[in-house]
Amino acid sequence: MNNSAEAISAGAQERLRRRERDVGEYIREEPLTALAIAGAAGFILGGGANSRIGLALLAIVGRIALRGAATSFIVGLVSNSDNQNPDRAKACGESHGNRKDDHGRTDFRNPD
Image (cartoon, rainbow, N blue to C red; front, side, top):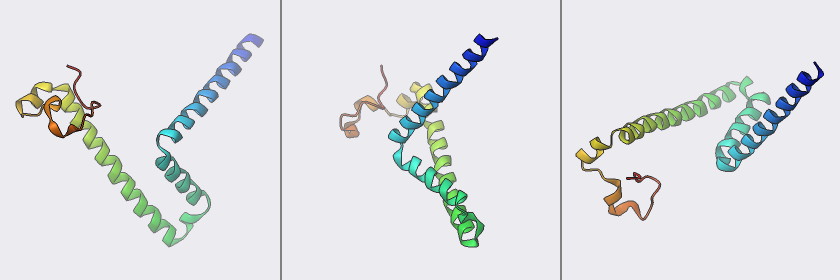
């Protein structure tokens, strides 16, 4: 029984280390988003949402964030549908490999 408790403890410690590493990676990769999340959490926990002005500010920021998330979702859907159906892109005359305005970028080219 002692071994199972040690295994659970070791597993929990490993998950905590992974979570800390994931948070650190997220902050390095998305510093502005992490700052915005921290600022919003501080605003709410600090009591900023208790006033009318605070609630109005929170509503405005929430709408902006929701609009950005919806836009990213729609762009993701559209780009995934183009990647899943390469014949459609060729039929429409879109060939990422032959575009002259890509300035040497390769992150969006098909691996063909």
